[in-house]
Length: 458
Ligand code: SF4
Image 1 (cartoon, helix red, strand yellow):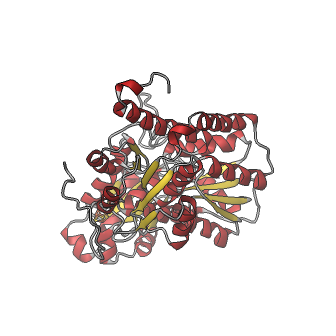
Image 2 (spheres, helix red, strand yellow):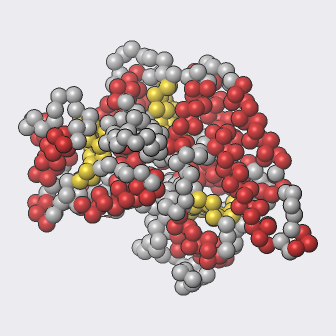
């Protein structure tokens, strides 16, 4: 087995990460930038960094991901990347004609100390940015944080650069989603539209990284939040940030810079979190719940009641990003499952840890940050084996070694399809997630049951 050398005995490690439970900041920054219409992500660093960021996103979404790079070589690494970025900006607008270039930094450009503000101001003064076009940047050093931090930083950069308070409040509710699938963003829009709410959502990667094949190549797919709407978010009546780790900084900016009243909610994963999201919409928008949403909720409750005996008491371990972990933990707790372990490579803070312990109960082991890696998760599982493991593709090695069904959630998922198209948010997403859990449990029962108890009807 690939992981046969992982020892069962756990020793504290201060300065070593083995098989990290995260990817690097620019991956998240690029993903956020892709959720803006006609925006080209640009990686300010070496070609190798950009190739990795693009390949991570391309493999996860099974779509070609467009992004450019400052293409550092030895000279830029020593003397700084200003010349490279200025030339890049010139070339990109000439060749690819985006409306926005969203620059993310990398480890190398951060260590050199490139001043992106100064470089972009220089590009403006040298007329390298055509009229009506924008270049903005987010600082995304990958020697700290994770892809979630990078996503949050780019989202904050969008709010900082575009959102404007003109003094004329509009009736829109701004939605800031955390790092979730395009299918989940589409599901949140489905709930908002169903309730008749005028909204602005950014980023919005639905229709971008899960766009249909129609025979035409589009450098910039039809989806993505329009720039005009992001500007208008500064005048919106309120903003709801869904998932603290991915959105807090942008929510704070809308609050302090534009005086937009903001609330930070959990991602609407599972019944109770979706109920909370819907109730908040009712309160803030003064709308009622449409019958169609009641039906969606009722279906999820129905299947959960019908099949509760298959999930109740099942032991689970969950690896992933803080906002999704919180949602999955609530979902599992709602279904009466027992949560053994929660591991995230993204630092999540004491408040998050306290909350997740309240949800999961006192016996849960929770660890976040650099040493919360897959090696550690494997050790935890060797000492206390769950019935189900939730996590990304990298967890398949643990799942195989320990013979545990793996339900693929989070980022990245390189070896299965469907996550871009079928949500886990909202009531419909909850039903989809529940069906996947039931499939995993029942497949295992079918595999393991002796002949005399091999059931046709379950
Ligand atoms: S961790 Fe740093 S050096 Fe490695 S790909 Fe990410 S930005 Fe580049």
